[in-house]
Length: 108
Picture (cartoon, rainbow, N blue to C red):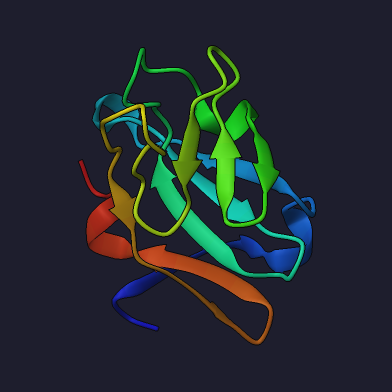
């Protein structure tokens, strides 16, 4: 896991919820857990008005922005039509119950 930095255990992320990982001025990363225990990571900013996606509601493989209810895909960070725009997705992996992000993505 040298290129990967452990963030937390999967059980530390609530089902249908998120955990926020601070990165300073580069913007936080939101790490999401679906009902089926799939884990995704996005820049914690909605492409619409910058709302904190980590505070949104996870449903299926999407998250609803808490500000204006935009539906954002967890896999690609893109808004569902008719809305347009994307937020940056990040690589994430789970190994033996430990969630990790690429170390390079956590550097400022």
